Length: 383
Ligand code: MLT
Image (cartoon, protein in one colour):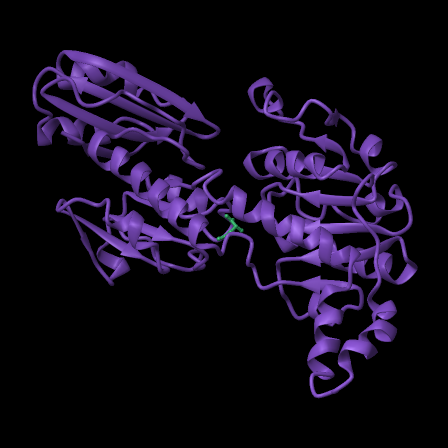
């Protein structure tokens, strides 16, 4: 029986896919699996029982990935599962930046008791007039699951689209509509944009990448859209760019005391993936990943251990090993467990994962011997 702790509410349609081998617990300290959305996990004590964490969402900056890897806790996310929800809000953000829809709605509310409102609107509306997005240029930074959808949707709405992603695979590139241009140097995007939308994870290499240097390369009056993470935008620099007119509007899904007090900013309360469909999709994908990991040892969509797939267990036993990259555990395995019917071993950054089918059941002594191999941080008998 595996104990599952939900650190945030997770859609029932996903949780319903857990079989009777899983039981929900409210106590994180006894969990084997944690399902999480935005709960901050950095200060939590990670119990020895914890085997996996699945984030029902894309961003994983609320999870201590290295600390988890060191304890042999595999962390998953659900790339693409909420991409459509985020894409739709990005489009709304672009439109809100161009048309003062909110100002107009507020005016109507404030004047709701005016008997002549149908006439007065005709005078008042000029205060809320805007511009169109057709024919304007959208720069999309990051062409992952969300960025691709945003780029194609903007293209379909008649915008010129320029995409940038230093890690763009051919498979991902082939999903872009044919009219979309990609560049390998951000300078070639910045010089032509009217809008920039960013869709990258918050990493040391991306934090603050939308800064003075970037804004200075953009035409005056550019709109910045941020539905990824607040730290990607340098807030001193965007405040200065808004004051100078270099940036016309900053649309962000991340409320904080600083941006909520800035002029020219439209802030939404992290609503990107808050749709019934996205929440359902993320929960279903997270539970599927967890079940494949717990029941078969397979890893798909981990952000701290390598993707590894050995199908369903074929031999009498299956053992899963988390280790530091470079460990010789894979080479030593058959000397410890006897005949190995099948094995796969992959490395990602500092960590490796070995999955092996054995012709005999894996004994407790064998587990102890594997644990004693240099670099091994966790051994789990899957079957
Ligand atoms: C994500 O990281 O998937 C989005 O920001 C939405 C969310 O955090 O739930």
